[in-house]
Amino acid sequence: MYKEITDNELLFLIEENNEEAMTEIIERYNSKIHKIVSNYKEKGLQIGLEISDLYQEGLIGLINAIRTYNQDKEASFKTYASILIERSIMDLIKMNDRVKYKTLNSAIRIDNFSESETQSLYNLIEDKNTPELKLIKEEEMSELISILTEFELKVYELKTEGKTNTEISLILDRNSRSIENTIQRIKQKIKLNELSGNRI
Image (cartoon, rainbow, N blue to C red; front, side, top):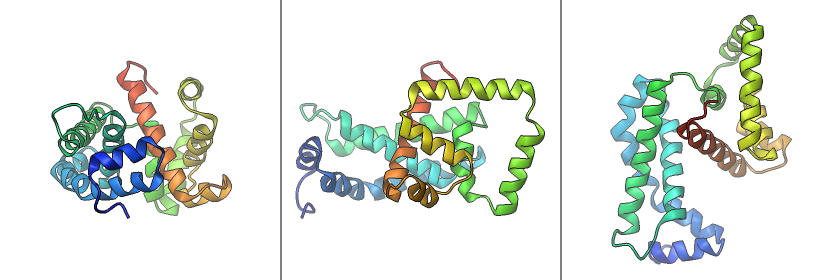
C-alpha cells in the first residue's frame, strides 16, 4: 500500500501516528543501516560490540531522523537519515571505546551467552558483591529511575535478570516488537544521559 509513495509522504503519515507508514520507512532504510554498519563492523568488534548492537544504534539514528527531519530544509530525507544513522553508530563506538563495560549493554547482550556462561557471569557478580559495588548499583538504579518510565524499568530489570525478549513479552503481556522498541528507547535514554555528563 505504501511502497509507491515518497519518503516525505510517509513522514506525514507517521506524524499522524500511522504505524504502517513507520514500518514501511524502517523497511525502506533497512539496507542503508546494514550498509553503514558494515563500514564500522571491524571497529565495533574490536571493542566488544556485536553487529546487532551497531544495527540497533543505526535504527535509533533512523528513528531520530524520522522525528526531527524538517522538510523545509534543502537536504533530502535520505541524506539526512544517512547522516544521523552514521553519526549514531559512530557515537556508540566512541562511547564504548572510552568505557568498555556498560551496565545496559551487558544486560542486553546476555541473550548471546550460553546457559553455562550466563551462570558463570552471575557467579562472578555474586563473588564481587561487595558493599562498595552494592552502593554503586544503588546509585545506578536511582539514576535509572529518574530517566526511565515504570514500564521501561520493568523491562530493564528483567533483562538484567537474564530474561530473553520472548520471556519478557510473555511476562509483561506485550508483543516482542514492543519489547524490542522499549529496549532501544532505554539504550537511547541512557546514552543521552551519559552524553549529558551523567554516568550509569
